[in-house]
Length: 255
Image (cartoon, rainbow, N blue to C red; front, top):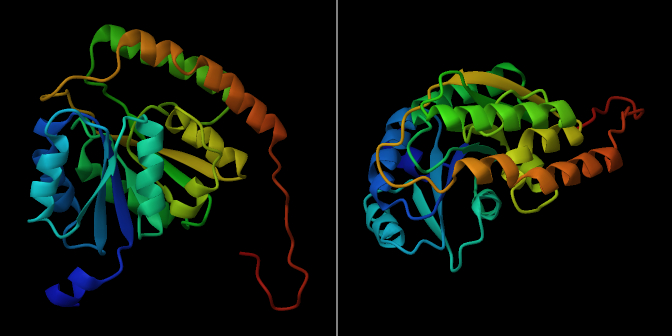
């Protein structure tokens, strides 16, 4: 495929990045995403500006003029990370989604490995590949709070995911759109995938210290903000159904 036809090919992968007041991180991270994916299947980069009050939107529009893969969506008001991810996935043109945080701590160079694992496992409509930050580049207290939160969540939801807070994930677009929507749902995506009857597999990924901008999460909101949602997801799990379907029509196959 020549360069011209590649530019117009339907994207196989959409990288969805939610951001709020991340002006300084935009250009470096977008450059890294392009470097990681250029030369492979066609891709798009979908940034969702979640009601930023700094120069994030203006900078994204400026970058988009020189970046054909970049699409910029905007929330007029700040609606939260889960809403921003949903907006990006819903508006994506690709059937496969990769998400990562916009603060630069996730390494875009890991995306191809997650996609490769997804394909090696047969892909499918209900498979999620989740990043596992084996070496966290955060403060000791933040690592401790995350470990406690992950332990509580994993013990209660049985989601087979040691690091559900990692922003790096690869999953089918349609499966995500089948998830129930609620605030902070991005923290529980592995459990929601399993609720659909799907699988979740974790792959070690790089984690980097934040070099620019300010974290939107402190220790306490990381640890406590999801408690109510945790019980809500447990309720959803108890009401979920995973039918085992057999196609009896001769020669037909279950989708």
